[in-house]
Image (tube, rainbow, N blue to C red; front, top):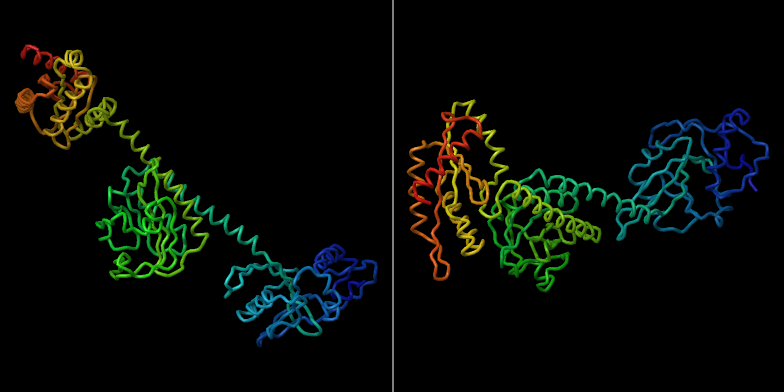
Amino acid sequence: MFSVNDLLYDNEVVSENFQKVQLGLIRLICLNVSINTKNVLQLSRIRSSVSIGGLTMPTKNKLYLSSEKLVSTQNISPYCRVVFNQNGILFSDHDCDYCNRLVNQIVSNSYSTFYLKQKLDFTSHDYQLLNTEEVKWYQLHSKSIDFDGVDAIFAYILNITDKKIAELEIRRLSRIRSLMLEVTNSIMKNDEIEVFYSLILRNALAAIEKSSLGSIFIRRDKHFQCVSCIGFHESVMDFQLPVQHSFLYRATDGAMDRITHLKDIQPSDLNYPIKIDTGEFVNIKSSLSAPIIISGEVYGMINIDSLQANAFDDSDVKSMEFLRDNIEIAITNHMLFQEKSHLAKYDRLTGLYNRHFFEDQYEFIKEKAQRYNETFNLVMFDVDELKKINDLYGHFIGDQVIRKIALEMQTSSRKSDIIARFGGDEIIAILFASDADELHKKFTNLQNKLIENPIDFFDERIHCSFSFGIASFPQEGQEFEDLLKIADARMYINKANRNI
């Protein structure tokens, strides 16, 4: 049984600071000493300063410990307890090589800085033991003390390796999730798939810290085509890699169904120097390569590379697995979003704009034309005798007729023109930089061209033709409905004049 005065000297009166003494008793439990609180406490002052490395530093109130007391409690302490100063270890009650190495690591780095951090209370710091084959983390609880008349640090050391690895894993996953969330949120912002690929690659490299280079390849039949790269020279974008020459193909015996981790890639005929963005030619030494599987097929692959051998570890492979899964989901969602966006603007059968998009665009075009005093023509088309064709030959042939007419209109128009499928057999267009007479001549010639090039269906020759009507903005109206009525009426006149 030890009394508090065996372990603690303070310069304050206990009766005035009973709560502080209680907290001190709780902290001393870490020493595994049974303390009799009924003993009369003998209190006195110890030295108020200490000299370390030529510097005089205040010590405030310090804990007093003797080697005798530590040795007597050595067998009941579950922790490694160490006393040390700038000269090295003064006491260690567990023969723990890792703990002793950790203390020596602290002493060799900057003992003075470490000593200054010690306050009245115990301080707690986490340290990674350096220069070891396996990762080791320790938590060091320490305080400045008087040890047999020598200024030193008392510490007890806990192995927190498992806890730290778990914390780092949670932090790693949280970071990757955050990076992938940015990719997910960008799906609706990036219409261009190339921009989307670049964001995926940039965030993948950020998630795997030891990476130097990265690339995304999309499969084009028997080749992989680079669609995004970081760290490589821009000429890589023109590079077509035969599928069978890829690390992914060779490491999986052609299956390309799992992530490959190449730790130390040796130069060979298939691992030749490649140009990086500095202009140098280098050999990739380590690589993580993951297939991108979309709808059960190899859509492409993402490669994270390093110029150092053995750059990646198991945690990086886990990161790559998480990235690969999220990239596949993100690309699939991007493709679905693009498809829905396309369907929101385009007609599935003809590839022309749809009616909803056309009517929305008209308002923008009208406002611009009014602001800049511009003109344009609205043209209404109607496929001739489509109902009769559907009844005689079926809707499949009717669809072919619509497609053929739509294609002719697209190829004969300017990029600035807007052409849309308005209804079942109706097509509508806004055409710029031409007057009504020129357009009338143009579409009359197109009518004749289509009639001269019918669709062959078994022994039948199915003629494609259309009727049209033109209304001019702003001479004949400015509102959509007004121009549509005029163009529609003239279309039926054109149809009647051709005896259809």
